[in-house]
Image 1 (cartoon, rainbow, N blue to C red):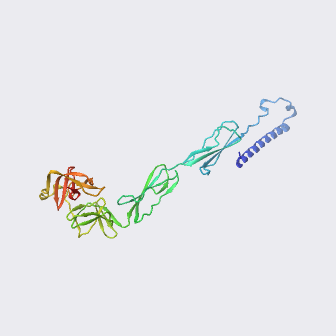
Image 2: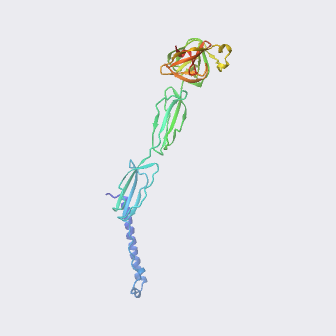
Amino acid sequence: MKIPKFIKNLLLYDSKRKYAHTKKQKNNETLVTNKHISPQLESFPKTPSEAPQTKKEFQDAILLILYVDDKENELTSPQIISGHLGEKINYRIKTIENFDLINFKGFTKTYSSPYAILKLTFAKKISGSIWTFTRDIDTNELLESPKLSKGYLGDAYQLYSPTISEYSLVNVTGLIRGIRSLETSTVTFFYRRQTWLTYETSCIYLKMLSTVFVYDFPDGKQINIKLSPQTIWKTFRTITTSADFTWYCIGGSMWVCFDESQMSIFKKPDTIDSLDIKDKDSISNLENHTNATIDYIEGRSVNLYDFPFGKISSSISHGVMVQTKQRYISDEVTWYKLASGLWIPEQYLIF
């Protein structure tokens, strides 16, 4: 086995030290004998304390412990442990922060040769993952597929917001820079469409004055749904665009662009109990409960209300068969009360 140069130097130094110590001891014995002991005293027998001392035993074996990573880079200073051939080796391996021992070469329990090398190979611990999401701040929809950031424990990291066409970054949650730990974390970048100036929750009602076309999105595509004149629709969200248009969401992916010539703001009654006598008389019980089928959009659900023009209480899927119990007519809008006790506008039913 090839002996590293610094070990040769260490052994050479040890040999010189041993030789110097022995020579000094002999010189001292000669000095005492020649100068300080008279001929008469030399004839006296020597006491046990004056008997020649046994030479000191020197260590004749060395173990070198190397600490490297999986690319053979040194992680810390080597350990040099010395002893006597045949003896058991007593040592403690160093702990290296954020690293795990994955391999070793040259392990031995005793000093079996004058020179030995133990190489310990370590790998950095894997840190917890960081998930990155990009969302539309107004609709909460994902704009891109989530991305996973991986790394090693204790390493610094920096995350950057991606550029998304037609969107501007408006907010971020989570830490975009720091030191990787064992915990899994998330970072979410929020964007808004560059053409949207405001996005708000809406609870007003719109009364159609003429036939109104419906779109799948603000400035989007026209869908095969038209709102009939004199029908009243609750809105849930409102958006103002950079082109100075106001759009109202009337449920799901159905949007109408506000036009004073086609619609107006409608004030709804608070509850049915607050309706006047004339309106109450407009509620009629259906003697023979009539079956109907929900007519909306394939794969979508339409909202059900706690009372006409009231709050959304549930929803029901397109194509489901229902049973009607009561009918209510107000401002030329007809509502039906279902067996579940909730109300739905007539335009969503096929009898």
